[in-house]
Amino acid sequence: MKKHIKEITALLICAAMLTACGNNGGTPASAPAESTSAQPAASPVSETGESVTKAETTLSETGSEIPEENGYRIFVRNEKGDPVNGVLLQFCSDSECVLGETDTDGTAVFDYPDGAYTVHILKAPAGYADDENEYPAPASGGTVEIMLKTDTPDKETEWQNIDELDFTKPVNIMLPEYGITYKEPDKFFGLKGYMDPGASSLSDTDPIFREFCFYYTPFSRYDMDNIIAYYDAVLEAKRYKEEEPQPPDERWKDWLDLFFIISGVYITDADLTAEEVSRFIEESDSGTGEIAEIEKISADIKCSVWYVRFGGIEERAEEIKDQLGEYYDELIDVYNDKETQLSGLTFSDPVDFAEVEEKTVSVGDTFSFEATDLDGNKVSSADLFSGHRITMINVWATWCGPCKRELPMLGELAKEFEEKGGQIVGFCLDADNDKHIGNAKEILTENGCSYINICPFDGSDDVFPTYSYPTTYFIDSEGRLLAEPIYGNDVEAYPAVFNECLEAME
Image 1 (cartoon, helix red, strand yellow):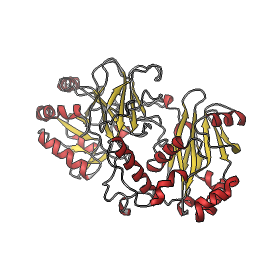
Image 2: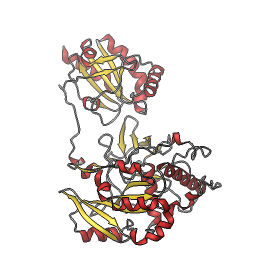
Image 3: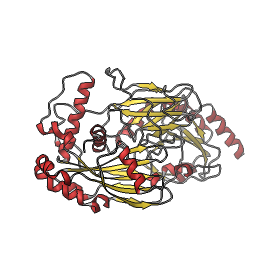
């Protein structure tokens, strides 16, 4: 069971903290920032063992480890060198920003030509510290590596305040590209110990393999959150050459030896035999001992899914009893309960992201929606458009630098358009709660923008499909699109397009 304890421990920590080793398939927040798998370029920890800063960027010099692709690849790791899934990124030029999200390999790809770009972390997953750094991308394309620091709570309270610990949420694993979803069964919440499915990527070459394994450890969910906080505090102390903290509970020193990998679900894109799957598992770092059972549980043209149960637990009964005490019977129960282990597994049609069509709008399309403005007033598209010959909708966000840079000019343009029977309306796409709404109002006031701004609404992504920010639409009094959308801040183009639309109406 301890054949690969270091690798398994890292996986367990990742799964227990975030379930981020395999959480959201790796799809982008918006095209064209499509996430694809890529092998790590290098560890963000220096090879000399020197301490590192909160976040640092290095450019890949190992072309053999990252496939040659056009554009830019952003690779995000944590302090232990593990890829971080679900990091929402901004990829910005001087005129526009696009969004992307890291996949299970911690990678997001932005297919853009060579140029001057910067990368920002817009939103880090739970458990990671905010990162307000700006990372310049190489002018000739390539890879940017970002080390994302774990958010370690105050050492005086991190192991004591149960109200601040969130250990009640079920583990949900989604692999939409294979049509697979796993939701942690309710039974696992009733255990004295901790049963946890942790996901990872085993191979991104032919054949591709994904796995999630079921771990049992004789600690409660509350204990596990505290243990992980302690473990991260120890790592941080070592990294920054500080005095290591002492655990409040002496049992935690032995927790690495007190977990058991019961079984695993393995997903591959190839139609392999049981012998081939077994050989891959045994030869990979996933190996946890001899395979006691292997069964194909689903297959389609996209992938094959295998259930594998590992041996060694019942054979080591006396040794394990001494280690686990009252937890032993529960371990044996969940080990033999294959039905519950797999009860949260569901299958659907795989999503081929390469074939997903982008939502677009064309000249002549009609816009219709119900929304609220930043002051909470209800707004309908019919009322919004009907009183003006042309409405310029400017889609922006408070986190978007190019968007905010053009706001002072938009405040002046709004007065000019009003004299000609037009108006500017802002659509602040992150004004989705009181805090963000307040921030948006403050930014608009500072930049002299007194025109109406609306908040996101149900279906707003379909009504105003955008892949870069800002995006600007010109719409007539009946809600029809008059010109192709303008992507990026192009203040000089706005009055020109506005006037051309007016002339076409004459």
